[in-house]
Length: 473
Image 1 (tube, rainbow, N blue to C red):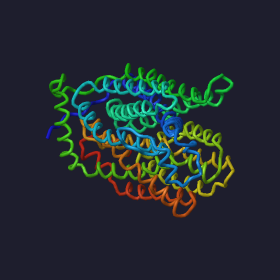
Image 2 (image 1 turned 120 degrees about the vertical axis):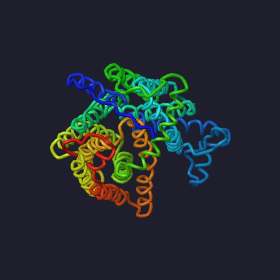
Image 3 (image 1 turned 90 degrees about the vertical axis):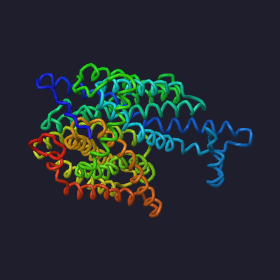
Image 4 (image 1 turned 60 degrees about the vertical axis):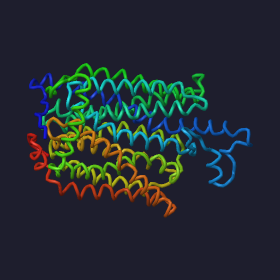
């Protein structure tokens, strides 16, 4: 088994703070992809473009097949689009894109992580994926009419590049912050990210909602939002690339195919080594349970507001912005609490907060937007902090020199279980005829996560991998 000393933060506090401030900017830069492209504009626009193609393909056979009153089966069949000989409903395009991107990342991210840990090129790999993803999203400005295939290809490149860059970005945390700094640094990074994503989305919504007054079509306004997201991501990514230093000691030859070959050797060693750190794997498994609940709440909140509470799109848009900006405050509060009580206790309190938020969502009355906004404030307060402290606590349990590989497991495992929550939500909604029972059922993820986290001896897990123990955990 190959064992290496891990990278160490700069000894000079001023130099360390400079790197930390630069690191925060990548959260600010990339969050626009997650918020504007994935959550708001991407799904609706690409689905609309695919339906346009489906309509054009069958226009010679009769009236618009996507608006007929026929049975569901016939309607879906007439709205099919195809690629590589495969036919599927246009409305299913977005789900398939996310699924394929996840499969590709499951294969690709461990290799990227191993190469990053092996070489001294981690910062340049981060930049390469950031600029590739940003360029792909910016080029979505050319997706119009019925050319959904171009949009699908560009989004796939953007999604895979984003996931790859996130693994590398996370792995810098142990390199720029000591054990007692990581909770604060991670929380500030998440806070800055939500502030950046919210700012970008707010500016884009001003453009989108006023497209008529600006002499734009709705389609053109959305395409400009894609362009601005790509430019935003690339422009602000320059700041961390300029400020982050090189902390990884060389492990051997650093050029050509040798580093790639050595990366596969690193994967093999890591798989063998992981079995000797069961507490790290136990925390990872626990995190995957409650983070599935977090991502599900974020993904279905608009559906819950629209279909169960009967809100218009304007209310849902305001809700997304409220969550983004309140999440900044929530992450900062979590960072301060972790400094006083430790990350584990703060996460446990946050999980209880999630249960309370879901309970409040159950009782929101239809057509009462102020109640819905209050729930959004609650989500924002616990959203960023839970994720931020989980990231910093996990970084304490990662074996030195294996940061990128273990964070690749962190990233792909999260994606690999992200279907459980939506499946539970949809299944209970269908069985009961109400999404109220579906939303309250998601509390199970946080309750189970709470119970399991209480059983993990975090300090022993940190000691087991050979990392220095922080004062509070």
